[in-house]
Image (cartoon, rainbow, N blue to C red; front, side):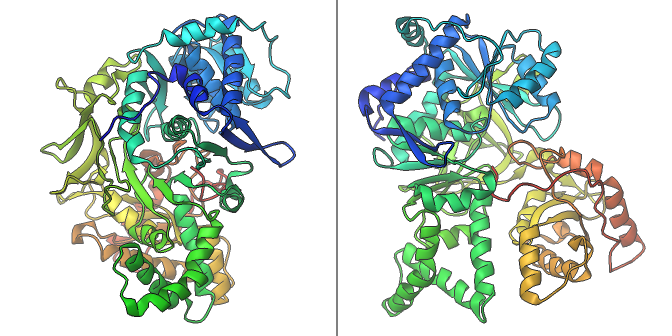
Length: 609
């Protein structure tokens, strides 16, 4: 692998990029009036300088902590690189986080400055400020709203550049709080060198540069979105920010026309579900859809028989091209991570001519451990370890990683650091996995999520849960069965897909649909199909349909949309007991479905990051 040119630290990235890319477009976003605007690399440098000089004028010193509380938007990028240039440490805060988490992250990190998106977020900080004695300044990142305090006179530009140039790879760049599924999040310390090692390893694998456009809707509070930001700007591409509500992402893709689309699996799964639903609305549509996918995969693999060429061209007009145009017509590289993606969704996208690459990493590894890429891909795996990262599987099946990208530890938590890093520098990921003969890594579950039945069987719940969630009718699934004779499942429904199914079938559903016997019969088929894919001890003997989906606001999902397993099982403990009681009584119809508390609003859209 040839080394790729990059800046030594993130503190000088916008200076470095402007010197190389000048007036090329760096950012694209929608204005208040809805029109698209561009910011060149030179303009990006100027805005970062202005913001950075303001931070210096406020008295921000090297290694001070600066928290950023905002949705993904171009001002996040200005604040991000301005903080780096000022020699300070970025502390991202999820805008969806509740008061307790916001106060914990800002207080635990010792942030002295908080940069807020708007007056509403600033008001939240002011409300919590009695518990945040270390916060000296609260700033707004938007010019159209009055800041919470007088803006200082900007300092000289040379002072900012001098500060930026003093930063080294060993210096701390950011503290990212992992949205753990239990307890308060832990702050992962990441240096400029950790993040630079990831860039050195991945830049040669990602085909991009001037003229390319990366669509960014993922939260910049999450490391994956930040890595995409760094890569795009180093390569000289254009970073396109989504311009509306998160539920409109799919509709906006046709307008944005990106070449690169990083996402979590739910966006791709939603596209698949919408197309399949449209196909099923026509007689024989599902059969034609499945045959078109089969033919498209053959073509993607370069093994299309000549006698299927006409069928392929017909399918291209009827299906493949329509899907490509729905995503803007230019996507040639898509990345998925953060959760497993169903193989049939990857096959669908590949059939349509959209290459999807799955990767694996965690905040503690600066975001990347392994990656599929155009030069080496094996579907069904998360790719080979990237350059500079060693991977081995421990005796108990845990994935261990070591390299320059691995973090130095957790902020102010030496006990947790000792648990994560052993004396030889191996990061204990907590994930279970395997490496095949060609070096491709597969992730099979979480070590701490293992279910041990009362009969002593070790079960990996993610296998059954993923099998259930492959159905477009299922939104979330949680397997329960620790110290029980056999597992059961708690299932939430995809409201849009259930509504579409009812419309196609001419079914008038009861409210809520989770209590409709016809919906239960539909999900029973899903459970039966999932059970056929797992071992006999892992087969779910019963299930409950919940009246509500899991949400961040309701405390059942982390800000990165991972299920808080313990919170789910605690909230629905009575439902679980009903399931096992019904089984003990020998009932094959199962207990009454129940939804539990009705206090949480529905997830805005299945495409949210």
